[in-house]
Image (cartoon, rainbow over all chains, first blue to last red):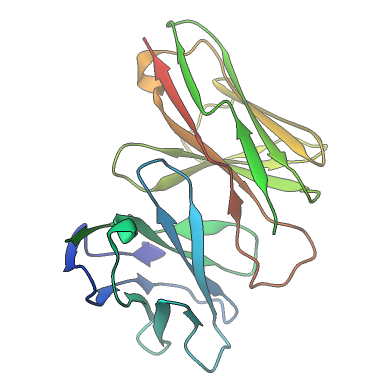
Length: 113
Length: 118
């Protein structure tokens, strides 16, 4: 079974609007972490936000927030007030008790002016 | 914050050439580093886990003799693509995570290497 599932290959959003990128995960490990990375066309992976399995509150980092629904095993990324520079690939990732990361297939976000 | 440097950023070479890619942790010691391969518009595929002072752990389907990994020091891991062919053309990216840090610490990635084999 896939550890991380991102069902949206591509998304479009109007500039200044909010957008939600979906991520569901599969694990039986009670301790895990969920991460979102941004990958612009230049290729580097940029860490955006983290959510721990025991965190009581949803993580927020500036315009990024994570809608964590533990029972549903989902960790959707919300980008508010989209900017043209937000156009990129976005990857959801999970780390279980070990050190290895599991990545989803990514969502390509295009911000329309 | 933690920085990972990867070199070179781009390589274009002839078929049959061996290519070495370096991954350095600049401000922390990394006993473990990870090597990924990424095809266009696809996710990162873990190739191998590089362990300092011991053999790398390869994922299923990754040829050990094709992709040689050496982790000779706590700050440097190298990936050598031996006798490269056009099908080895891809984006290769390494990552590392400072040891002893909490679970919130993300993997830090190098900027990647675009390998093109003619």
